[in-house]
Length: 424
Image (cartoon, rainbow, N blue to C red; front, side, top):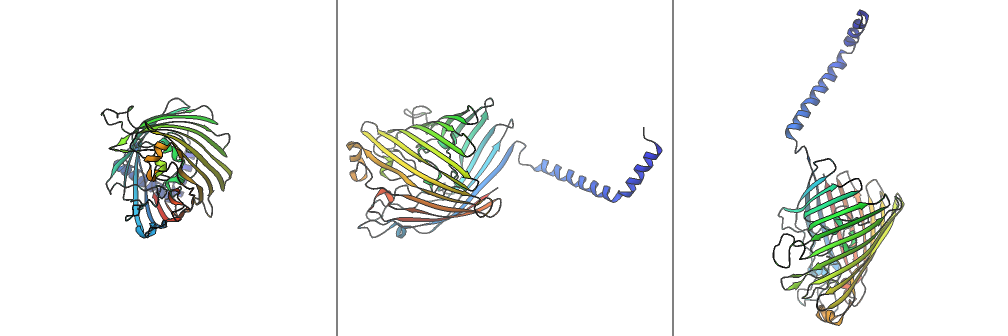
């Protein structure tokens, strides 16, 4: 029970700290008012908004071919283009996520064929990793739901915008269009880019902290009810991957992809990963069935240096015609936090998808009637991400192609890009 002496002591303390108590009372009142305003005007109690905007200035130089007056530098001008993405992430249980991503962009790819002679000066090797073009229209790019099933299993369902790289880890530090490699090829092994995938599901089983299995299936025509389309009877990509992580430093992935691409009108979609030479796409007037095999690895030698890479092989069967083989390789070097926290120097050296051989019937229908690409062209890319603030980074870089379209008749081409990324 409080005594008179206790009450007197409390009264004396209250008088002594009257100014401090008044200040504290004012801060509490202000905090209550601000909390009430946030509750009245918040976007949602369950949904978070995040976004990314990319500005890019790009140009290409060289790349001419014997007997052609124009080269890639002559027929392409310096561009200033953008892409913006807004993510609406909703959680109902705290461990699940419903994502709706809105996207708009105006990226136009470099002209790759001489307009006078129709000579192919470049395949898809010059594509940038963020070259989205919606003609400035806002579109729903991704609609997906992810949820846990027990403590070691995660399920993902895509209604739109799914890629095989969403269903399995690609094991590379450069797999980000806003913060990673500048080129499409430099982001990840092209076998993850099965033609025309969009809707489907995937599941990840984590057997232990060291071993995981990812399985998934995505259709490119799930919304179409026509014969030869639909969820299970049209274009699709299916993936199975074992990922081994024996330590924090080392990751290794073994990947198998089976995919099918039919006809787009009268033209074959082919093995179109958006990378590599024109012939490596095996685009002839036939549907194709593709079995791809990949190995990816990344080793963190230290906090400031990582070495990794991948190899990918695709066996492409043009149904009713014959078979073709496509290979690609890459070595990656990453230097995180070089020169400051958040910075990164990245180097990619490799061979973009290249047709190494095909049956005579397939070769006869390909451009130039060749059964393989005539030469080997190398992709060498260097970029440096400078993290200016927590939300702004600037990444200048150069992509050097020694023999565009895997053809030594084409002069070396250089692509220069300055990417500025804003995140919020």
